Image (cartoon, rainbow, N blue to C red; front, side, top):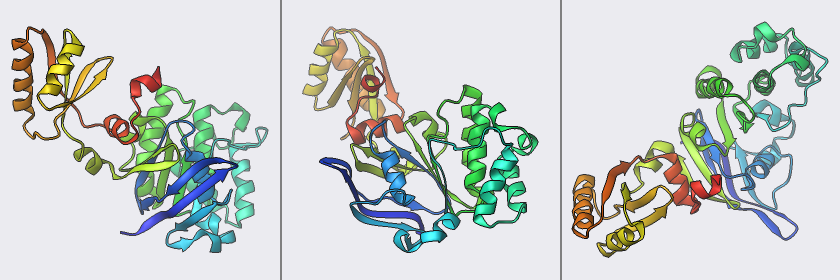
Length: 310
């Protein structure tokens, strides 16, 4: 497997604070890779090291097989990026902003037309950026990142601040980018639902450590089957279920049962239902829990999604 981005033992401290701890990422070529983690997990610090904006304390970074320390000016030809700040001249048009970057990179004017076509910004390129919506500025930022036809595109929270329509449009756009441009796309985000609908591969960062990584469907398939129970007297029900050898998570929405040792979900559901009813408990619902990115994230990090949202 050819890797677009590979890091080995990537580590970074800020004083006594260990921000990034031995991160080894493997991003295959031609995919959308979702780089996940809660705010403060270290995602942006990792991206800045990959972009050579800050130096790692220890470790190695390779882009398309090449050590980033040897790339120097060639970095712009291999990597395009959109971090949090757009940095546009608001009094200039979208086209004029792109033309400034085009000149710095020594590219022909045709490069601007190409990226405007990719990002569906041709009709608005003649307008001043001051009049752009947030979604349009995001697309213009991606257009600028694509100017040099990079092999790797890094986007940090590209849906931040967008309205529902803008998020949907950006999601579709990102899914199509590898096929339309040939670039590998790394999307950093804390929005699990958006990444699940966009990325084919994921990496989960938690407190500076990479705790899970790989093709999303494979990682979800490796999760144990789970049942969600809505039952009267949850605490007594949990004790009873645990006495039958099951692992129980107590959540605000009920009990979640791991079926680690059982492949037959229906058999386990029937056993638990009978046991609870025979114990005099009321069972309101027994349903399989889908194998989702939320479940994968929760198991990999030990973070309860409900608690984090609250």
